[in-house]
Length: 74
Image (cartoon, rainbow, N blue to C red):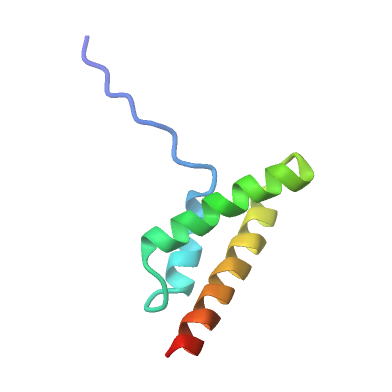
């Protein structure tokens, strides 16, 4: 029996895709993924639950701040 088992995509895969598109040319896909992961863990730590909409808002803010810092460094 040959079964192909695929891992479930991260619950934030859609959020990552949306943010990758939104920040294309500004941040690498790795940076977007790291921000989403950091947002996930931050939400868990503060609220005890990481609802996708909260993770998206936190990650987007992280990405905006990183873009601002990068632009100020020139």
